Image (cartoon, rainbow, N blue to C red; front, top):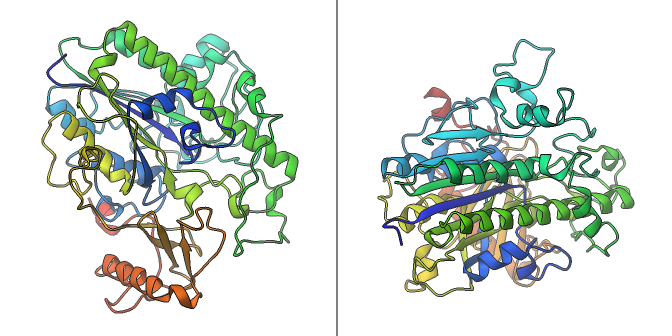
Length: 488
């Protein structure tokens, strides 16, 4: 046993929390993730406070809330300048650090504390456009996967060859090249090569960061075939959801809402589930490589997604909204070599958030946690020795007319739409699919008022002016990035 454990941080993009077979999903098969959960702790109420890539990853990288990172919505091309980062603290503690796959920072080649990065953020519109001088970074210089792919499949291949947009959550088709050339396999291939090339005198901190199951929905055919003819679960539709689609938004392949043609939706569901199983198999491939290199039993593993995918829930798609399909994420902390000497196969209900990842992994390695970190180590929950934990989390997202804030403890959820003043309230214990909006139900008014007061406390002093400390103020202009970040 080495003095400090290796840390394997596996991050996926846009995976729903319920898509684990160990949580009894009716169709999704995730044998390797199930085994990681059996060898550790599964946190059943983990959330992305701000459920889209940029703000979610900022909280993961820094251990800070969205208010402290300043990223309260999605905005590209805002520099990342944080004093303390998770890989930076591991590097200072003597770890060999590397990220392979998606980081979604700016500048794209910003190391953010890693010794080395091998990048594929997926299709990034702002550095692919060829018709504008506003393209600040060339995709050709910031992506490592596409040159690798072209060396093997031909100089003519591109990320757009399937005709699927990178946000097309309603359409799908199988990957047409050999499976080993898929970006999911590429992340694993490069990660195995890291095991060969790493400094053997140091423990490692490796972030394997998969772009999928984020669109495009392009699984290899063998995985798509696992689900295409299966009786897939119907998406839940709340009593508050849209029931007519006069604008026919559901016919837009990159829509975030609408009534999608049934066959098209089922194909998208099948492809999404297939991408998850594909990732699971590639995780299994890497775990076998770790055994071959003799590091498996010396490694603690954390698996998480940056946010979820609505996948037709309430006729909604993609992410960013506060509903369970979007904001709730899978979170597993696994210890296959029993380095931590804790009980295994534990499932925990306490409310957790992405900012808890950095302090957890630093705690695992006995590395000092910087004072800037606002998350809490999940080892406290896993040890089941302490009863005190946070009562709730505050989440939010700038989203135009639908900009919102939410409060949840994993058992209930309060949502306030800042531009309209509309409120929603869900009893997640009785109604985990958020089918019934109880905001106007008299029996729940005290609970609504309590959550509203919690939100007022959270928003007091915010630069947008959402509250005067006594009441919520409707119509204040939201912003994706707070001023303090843009001034740095």
